[in-house]
Length: 217
Image 1 (cartoon, rainbow, N blue to C red):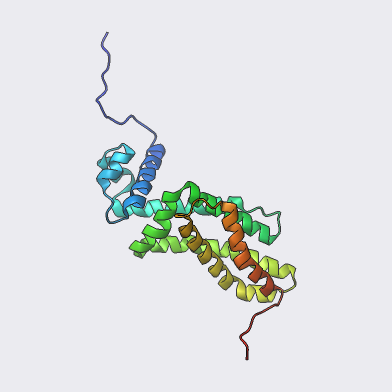
Image 2 (image 1 turned 180 degrees about the vertical axis):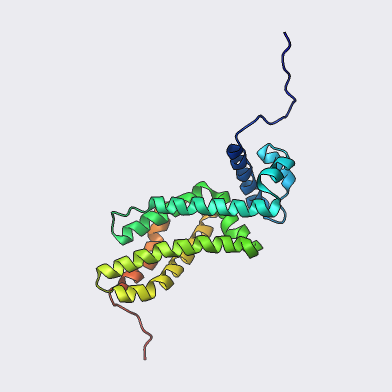
C-alpha cells in the first residue's frame, strides 16, 4: 500500500472565508506593530502561514489589505458598541454601557485599536477617511442619546441644536482616553466609562436642563 506524503510546510486547504480571516488577523497584528509603511508582506505571509501569492490573490496588494483591515476592525468596533447599549435603560445608562463596550473592545483587541486610531490616521488619505466614517457613526449614536435625554426634559429643540456638537466632543474624549489607556491598562473599563460620564455627561445634563455657563460680564 502506498501512503501519500504531504509536502512539508504546505498549508492545508481551508474555506476561502476562513483563510481571508486568517490573513486579516495576521495583517492587523503586523500593521499594529510596525505601521503601514514599515510593515512587510513577507512578515504578514509568515504570521498568517500562507504564501504571498495567496494574499495577493485573496485580498490584493498591501494598500488594499490595509484598507480591508481598517474596514473590518471599524465594523467590529461599531458592532461591539451597539451591542453594548441597552436600549431599555435611560439615555445616560445606555451611554455608560456603550462606553464600557468600547473600552472592552480596546482592551481585547489592542492591535485593532492601534491600527484604527494610530496607524490609519497617521497614514491619512483614504485610510483616514475610513476612520472618519466610523467616527461619524459613533457620533450619530451619541447625538441620538443626547437628543433623547433633552426631549424627555422638554428641551428637545435645544438638544437637537447642540446634540451633534456635544457628541463630537464626547467621542473625541473617549478616543483620547482609550489611547491613554493603552499605557495604563490597570484601570478597569467601568472606571474609565465612569470618569468620562462624570466629566462629560453631567455637563450634558445641565445643558439639556437649561443650565448654561456664560463668561462673566
